[in-house]
Amino acid sequence: MRRSAIFLGTVVAVLALASCGSSTATAGRSGAASAPGATKITIQDGFGTVELPAPATRVVSLEWTYTEELLALDVTPVGVADKALYNDWVTAGPRIAETTVDVGTRQEPNLETIASLKPDLIVGNSDRLANNIESLKGIAPVVAFRWNDPAKKQLAVMRDTFGQLGKAVGKDAAAAQVLAGLDTAMASAREKLTGVGEKFALAYPAGGAGASTVTIFAKPSLASQIFEEAGLTNAWTGNADTDGLSTVSVEALTALPADVNFLYVSPSSDDTFTRLAGNKVWTGLPFVKAAHTYKLDPTPWFYGGPSSAEQLLTQTVAALVK
Image (cartoon, rainbow, N blue to C red):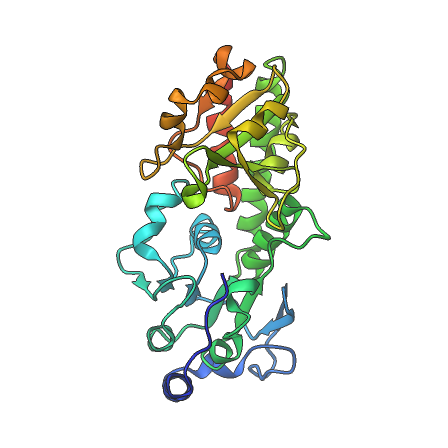
């Protein structure tokens, strides 16, 4: 997930572009210059405190989560990472504008392209940006959020991060309104899901891990916490990685209770769950025999912001409530 180091020559070229073309490059971590008399905006990210001289208007997003959140705040990023893939994976909320520039991949964004856009804010994930954050800070202030802090619940982190991003772009009131809408959606889902069976499991194909291998969302994951906020109970109790995920064989699913509602996604690029129709372990599971398996479609983005969270709740209610 972490990108490789940037060649020195590239860094020098990018810094030269930034110093010539962007007056915002001097604003950043604590102590950066700001306009006389201006009220600084203070943001907390995964590395500490970031100070902005004014609300950002030219934002580059290097992570889909924050692209989704900016769009939910009615902010059109000037540049985003992995633009071509965004609409395939993040199906909730507004679409990216055609005028928004693709700045490379989330793992390896193109620094020269970013600098050419003259941003006044770059936002991304602290894990991905750890190796090149100094180079990015030479272009513009950088806010690098950490979403998988083991000391905090991911749902709480998502809410806080969304509020912080709203503050960074001068959209505090809009951010509060979006979060209030999520609370309303949570309450509505909780009411509608009452009586449908509270136990759930949520899974998706594990990709290259094997034809009969799936990834399940454990309690520490964002998706699980969204469901539990809506009154459901995660029936999966297996070990999880730092993202709150468990990658297991189909045989491990025998640990799930017979009355679980098994929710899953099956992207068109992976037919794992189709192939499982011929797997005797899978077809012998009590919840499969009882037809308590439910496909969510279109595939929601499980690592997103309020828009994706609302979409996940809407699809779950549609699947379970008949």
